[in-house]
Length: 120
Image 1 (cartoon, rainbow, N blue to C red):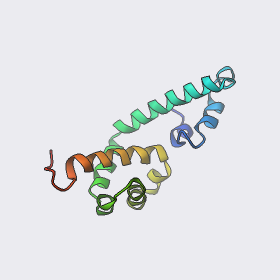
Image 2: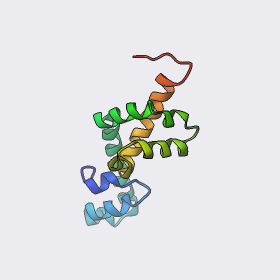
Image 3: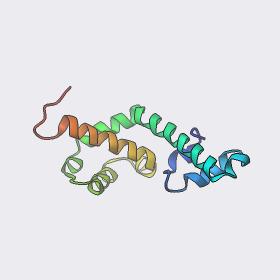
Image 4: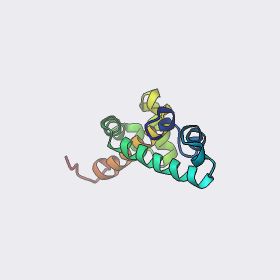
C-alpha cells in the first residue's frame, strides 16, 4: 500500500482510509481497527521515505533560505510562503509538502535563525 501513488499523495486525515480500503484485502478492510492499523503503518513508511528523499532535502534547504519563509511567524504563514515558493506538484502532494515544511523549519531554526552561527 505504501508504494501506491494515490496513497502516497493522500494525507492521513483526508481520505487515506478510503484509498486503503480499495488496496487491502477484504478481510482486513472489514475491520475498522485492522484498516486503521494498516493505514497508519503504511503512512509511517511513506513519511519516513519522504523525510530521507534528496528532493525533499533540496527543496527544504531552498525554502529555508526564502525571505518569505524566514519572516513567517507561525505555521499558517510558513505554509503560505511554501505554497508561493515551491513547485505546484509539491504543493499538491500534501505529504511531500509536509515533509519539506518540517525539514525547512528545522534548517531555519538550527542553522539560519538570526543570532545562530551556521553549522556548515
